[in-house]
Length: 186
Image (cartoon, rainbow, N blue to C red):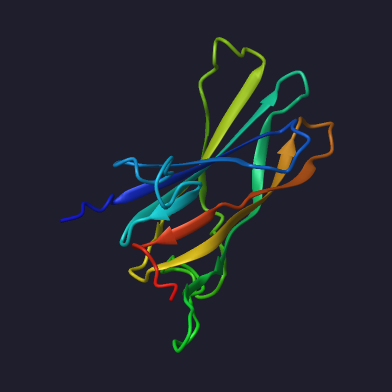
């Protein structure tokens, strides 16, 4: 009998002062299967059927740059279905639009319902202000097998004090993801 991890957490991170638009991200789960380092799912994210996915967004910024906080303007998960069956004498079949039950289509905008907290000062990085915003909901992984290109797109307003115009930034990442075992590719 296969044990299903009841939860997985997606943690994304950006620096208010970074020049790229890439989000640093990490998937973790209680059984360690979220972000495989070997085997057929290496380099991707493998969800378990029935899993609950929690999300937190982390930002840091230099106090010298005036960074005080950030506000999430929009946040979406985009899933592009991949082939699940192809070959001679069989119909071509794609995965469902999304592995998540809450998503009807390929784009799922997260409700802007986050709880914010100022993280403790890191003694090794005294100039760094760190803030985490945890999404108060979860995504539920369905029971349909499939593979998806998965993107996470985030627009934030970076605040640097009362006398500085807020800065709007877009950050994203896009690993491959899957649910279930091997797929029939003919």
